[in-house]
Image (cartoon, rainbow, N blue to C red; front, side, top):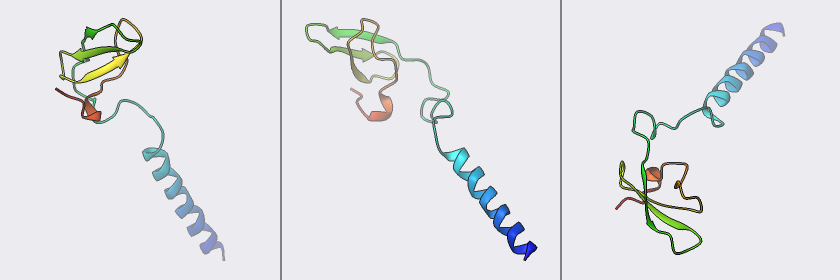
Length: 80
């Protein structure tokens, strides 16, 4: 009986560790690691959402702030 309880606890611990490593936001994504930061260039500021193009990764993005989007839009596939 004690062996079965020990095996069940071990299996539960292994599952818990696996789920902990793969779930949640633990840092930069694999797609953004090792790349340069985006440098946003304002293209169109006539609307509520201003259009920006990134000089680094050639992605297009929209933001309400004059500094441009906070995150890289390249993983979304919005490149030019």
